[in-house]
Image 1 (tube, rainbow, N blue to C red):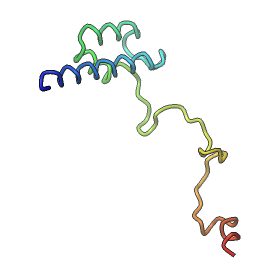
Image 2 (image 1 turned 90 degrees about the horizontal axis):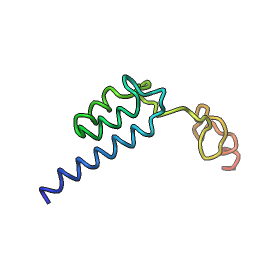
Image 3 (image 1 turned 120 degrees about the vertical axis):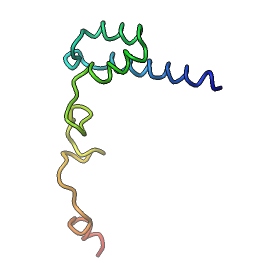
Image 4 (image 1 turned 180 degrees about the horizontal axis):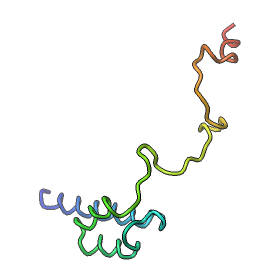
Length: 96
């Protein structure tokens, strides 16, 4: 078990970096073409993966994970300021 755990972690890290590289849009890849990044990750697995994560792609502002799709979720329409139950007239009418 102690011999296989580092190998399993290395393979997991390698797969994560490769998938991240493949899924990153070409316009967000920095410094080298995407094909070269894949080769670096495969030839030098640990160092190449770390370099990819640090310097391989452009980062957005903190807290964003991608383009916003709008909407409030659950089919409620556009997102807006949330209301508490005491501000919702429909909820208050239902209490009477």
